[in-house]
Length: 116
Length: 108
Image (cartoon, rainbow over the protein chains, first blue to last red):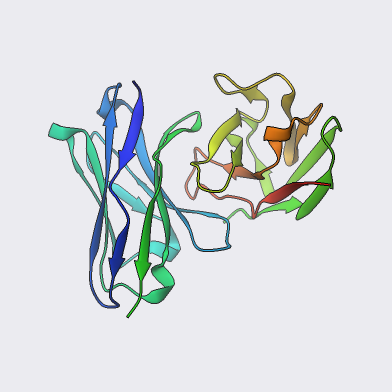
């Protein structure tokens, strides 16, 4: 079954770090780029950037440079999003999404809550 | 950076009606790289249309996309109860892959 399965919800304090995983199955992981998309509470979808699953080279949207890190472990077909120095404004649902013609396969989303 | 503006922000309609959603780009977008998504609360977004007018796998033919240049539309020919959701357009293919702010389709 072709799917992306993300790790579970996280509750973190401001200043901490979080790492969200996105495990692909049912297709060749390195054949498609992987994107990350954020949805803050009550807001729309925001593209965070993408990672080349062949080279591991990440590209970040302008609003997501500095504290956000995309990485891969191709041996287990998994992409990761790490957010450092968490702020309360980082509270959101984070989605991974495969891109081909548009974003045709999405993970179920991971809720990250940042609260003291 | 291309900005996508969707209108209207919210639409209140009844099942069975026809609806057209608008997505306007601040600069010309290649038709190869315009997509539409449906997003329901608690679910992952779902790709409806790519390449401005091609339906994604499994998408019913009541959904259709059209447009070119800076003006694109998503039409739902006859609303079903499960179609009430938020719809987003997106420019992809060339970074940044911008989303519009969304149109909420609600039941009247």
